[in-house]
Image (cartoon, rainbow, N blue to C red; front, side, top):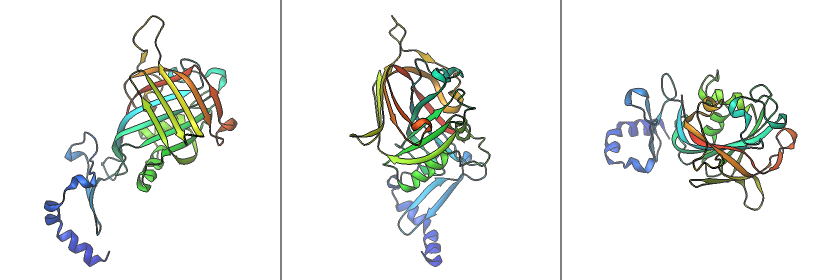
Length: 272
């Protein structure tokens, strides 16, 4: 676009503002933010006008929320939730985040899914964990870039933000892969598939965990992972009825096939 053309468009902003139906552009300010909390930047091209939050100064770099499911090859319950060493001295598992709404680096990420498949040794925070990230194949290029940077901890240089803190448990990200991510949930059960239907890289399913004779599932609050996962309220313990992982980049080859293992479900909210 020429400079003169861009200046003319900017000069006509008031008329365009009145005539444009902004619902078509999915304008999404930071969740729960007030006008004083963020700066709006108008981006003008020859075909679209879009508003996004600025991540400079005191603006919001990211703010998104949704639900997560965690599953691993430890027995019920995974000791990581109480900051203890994993069963058998190692743990391989995954966390899937289903983003309901929000923005990352000004990019709307509503409806996107992200998964971290991680392997670590005796102490999750001190054993050089390795992770392969998966971003659902419905993400546009700009969404993919924003999500990848965020879950690698690269949006904030000193990594003192919530997603930087998450890196203390996900460790080194070896690679990021685009793949179908299918999550099905009910009030009492769930299933996850990453990859093709015929040959998934990850598949898992489970149900809520209850003590014998109890009708309500076991809920946990203030666990060792509440801070890193930014869990909202309580998380619900799960019994992983099946867990299959085939991610060769991980330590030990990344091949797991297990039953009657650990899991957790809950809500999350990341903001910085």
